[in-house]
Image 1 (cartoon, one colour):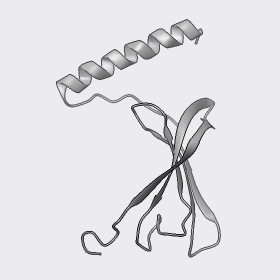
Image 2 (cartoon, one colour; image 1 turned 180 degrees about the vertical axis):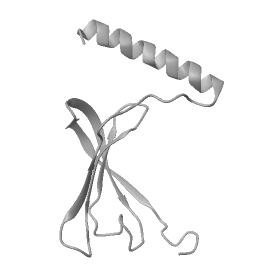
Image 3 (cartoon, helix red, strand yellow; image 1 turned 180 degrees about the horizontal axis):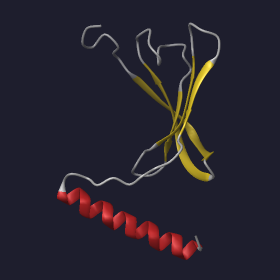
Image 4 (spheres, one colour; image 1 turned 90 degrees about the vertical axis):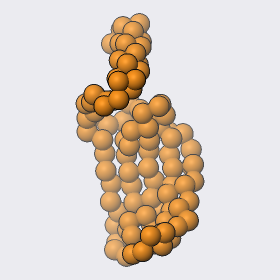
Length: 110
């Protein structure tokens, strides 16, 4: 496939949702990507991606109806591990965010 043959890529925002995985509930934004290709996200694939409704935009759930085969493919987030950003400014911001999350967990009694 040559460069640009899958363009335009269309991202449609469908709705907000809540998704539970491994005992953790996430507020999500549901999007539908469509590519002009015959691949996984081709037109007619009816793909839905559930991304966390926060600055991380973690992929929590993915469902794709397979247009060439009967059935669908699903993917569920199992765990999240904090990494260490490479850029020093990003490290400081990540530490600040983790501190805010810890404070919120303490207030919520978690």
